[in-house]
Amino acid sequence: MQLACQIMADAILLLHALFAVFVVAGQVLILLGAYQGWLWIRNRRFRLFHLCAIAIVVLQSWASVICPLTILEGRLRAQAGQQPYEGTFMQFWIARLLYYEAPAWIFIMVYTLFGCLVVFAWFRYPPQKKSDAIQRGI
Image (cartoon, rainbow, N blue to C red; front, side, top):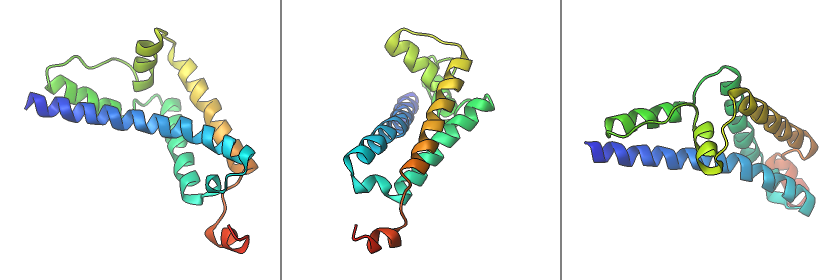
């Protein structure tokens, strides 16, 4: 049972990390792709999913809600006999990876500013409907 909980907690951690990479790398690729003229960055489904992903992060931070993935991972780690971490997923891993701890308001500000960048890119480099792309020969 403990091994299964540990494996599930590690899987949740991986999923959480991939979510964060999607949000950050996705935005980098959107901006780079707009500069380079990459057409795929205008994919409406990708952009909508990306916008929703950062919106969830921003709204959770404003509401002071810890991510459900963090809570689930912590419970699984406790069931596996491991010490769950305190605070949010990002606070823990940034402190662990960069040896830097910051108050919650710093993370809220960073998430909000990043969310504003995503919204800016949405309007500056808008996604296209499939019918628009077909008409343009994309």
